Image 1 (tube, rainbow, N blue to C red):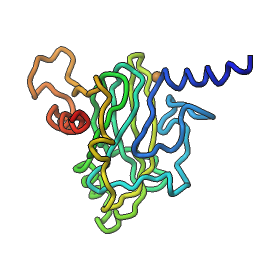
Image 2 (image 1 turned 120 degrees about the vertical axis):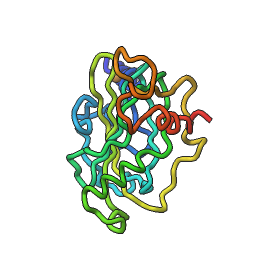
Image 3 (image 1 turned 90 degrees about the horizontal axis):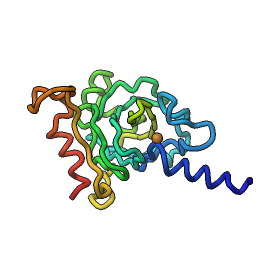
Image 4 (image 1 turned 60 degrees about the horizontal axis):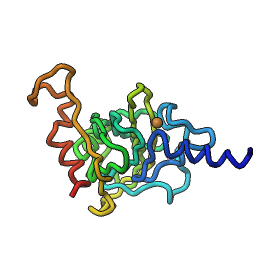
Length: 208
Ligand SMILES: [Cu+2]
């Protein structure tokens, strides 16, 4: 009977929720006391291991997830500082991830990061080496909100993932959100920061 437990655990891991592949997530949110249903970071503490903190360009870094849901509304937020509690900088305002598998966005949040730094009254010089946390949220068909976090350090020489590292699985893409009942047209779109154009630009990187 005991031998079934690892199999069940494995089934759980492959059949629900999402993994964060880049930046490196805080830890496996499928195990221990973690639960992706727990705001803001799945009950996984901020990393204390410097090697588990991804170096991120000031101009936005790469975000790569592996989703197990056929579709999920997806958001990427940023909280500045160590032990951030306020994930108030929206890097990607929300889109529908479509298709199961790997979804990669290559250069996430350039303008939002700059605005957030200005609002927090932090100089560009002070930004170098600063800690922050990337929070990724998925809202699934049942309405469950799932959370994962990854800790970063801003580093002006950090690299984006390469095109081959940042490739979407076949059939995986993203669709901008639109108002219910809206007809076509740019004015009907929610979230002007992620208009169809920007979203396509972010996600198309992975499709090439
Ligand atoms: Cu799930």
